[in-house]
Length: 291
Length: 331
Image (cartoon, each protein chain N blue to C red):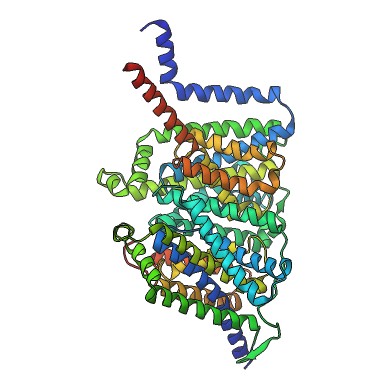
């Protein structure tokens, strides 16, 4: 029975990390679909969300729900600022240049966070009380349930947004064909800003949810974000269901390989599998053929 | 043509060779005027990084590919040399050559499947490679010494004389750096170099012209990995100590910054970019806190204003101004 308890423990741990990877992967997908670029600053939205939560709770003294909203909103605003100040002024279409541009912006964001909040690791309280529950034999922190629940909510909201609201449909239009969208009269610039805001919000949410577990620092988002990127590629870059599946799959894979294979080489397994997928099926599981 | 014109023409025709000669002469005489070991140490560091960025620039700048994980190759070179020359007491030069060959093999094995990818897939693959190497360097502590690093690496020696001072090291690193600089300048003017420039613009068009695109990409990838490995080995023998944190993805980003600032596709630009990044902390005292922001800002500003890289962009602007002035003079 103990091994079943352990197994459930690993499942929960995998689903937890997997949900966070899925949120980050969705952030990458939204920007890629509307702007065609890979936004390396996504990793910093994650750290930024955690930082804002910390400041809202301790410097501003807000209660947890308000701090939660403030953190996500702040991250979304940061996303819009990055698009407006960093990306829009550069009028290049060259993918190489754009990738390096977002890398530069990411370095700047990390530098700002390092200056404002320092280099130390900080502790952030979880959303609700920290008394562990026992589910199917696994010891589960309430934060884990919040992560799973809020990820589901976020995915549902995104799905509703892109299917049922007119702005969402506009974004899908721009993603499909920016030139045609301009011809039809859509404000492409505003939509690009909005896509970055959504990506920022998703990253911020991921940060707010996971940093109570991993502790917070200015670069906590980097490895998480890279794994989120890997998850997006795993599921097929640009596909929303792919991002979610890829995230959960990567989380579970990581958890099981750490448990049953080697926990020291956990990162090696995650990126090793990624490399394998890239070599064998570059478009991922649900990706579009012929990139 | 009168005498003066003939001399100017000679200089213009042989400008690359003359510049290298002047640079070599200047570097040969440099320690005679400046024997402060700290300053020589910095110039040696520039030399080591230059070897790495020459290779990386050929890959990113000329072939138009992306590598965000080259610090992985540098780390392999450094640790490979460290382990072979310390634990197995190999001659450091022999170790450097063997490690470079092994890294070439690794780059071939990694490159063949990876270079079929492009854009962000390639970026992610190289990042993943770097993270794998970094994690192994930290976790395999029985061999690598783990996070605390690997100490006690013997220095190089030439004909029985150990190269253990910055002064002596200067005369080992810079001839090598100038050698690789010359080889790179030669390469970009050769058929392979022109082929790389072509495939950077448009792979389909390049293929239609008969350029073997995937073979060229792999060749330049392996070359850049070998140069990175040599740089890593020299790093290990210069400082007699290596630790994994020097070979993380952040170091890869620093290398990329050096290449991009210098000029994607300008071999001389690599020298400028490397020197700028290495010298910056020395001249700006408040640098330490703002280092990331400054690096990132330089990257963003250069890419926004000069998407081809700083040196290439400035050269282009200069040429444009000259042509415009000539046109105005003729009217």
